[in-house]
Length: 285
Image (tube, rainbow, N blue to C red):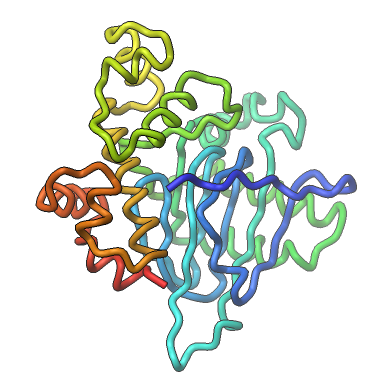
């Protein structure tokens, strides 16, 4: 599953973007962007895919996502729940929106770590979540300087708390936003050869590296082995097929490069916490 790269719609008269989403707009497709994102679930429940794991979300949740983290949101629907009832508030901004040196100020020791850690995904709790919710709810109605003051208060709250949980798992399929680094070529090589047996030597040759150099580079940039990375991409492609097609599991396993149905089901369950059939029942359209 390849995430769509989304631009951040920041107007010339603004330094950051605020979105007030309702109804179908809360079903956010799989995407990635190069800005920080703070999301309040005002109302609604459903599934939240982030990095390489599926989480549950509910009304009141507040999440912080670092740039480059692939994610999607899907709200649950039922006969007694109207689509219009779902509501999110989203704040998106670049680290430099207050100036290149703002986060380097000595007063921002804790805050700086939140905005310089790659792949960071946090879920806030307790009074921190309540304070962030209050400020985020005020953002859509606020204008100009008042809106900026609210964002500064949000940053202050995040910089003074430890009431959060990291949602990102250890293994992450790195998304290179520039598209010109070896890792982007490696991902393209794996994707193009997904149905075939992918050999480490061929992957290293695709970026003109020796196998030892390739392994060191890959581990340093992804904190994963190449085999883990290939498994991640195979499973994400399987998720795409399970969600959007009626293909039988045997065909999906084959299309994703699995030679054994048992291996496919076992690996899928380990990565996603459920079998492919259960995933299709919950998230298929």
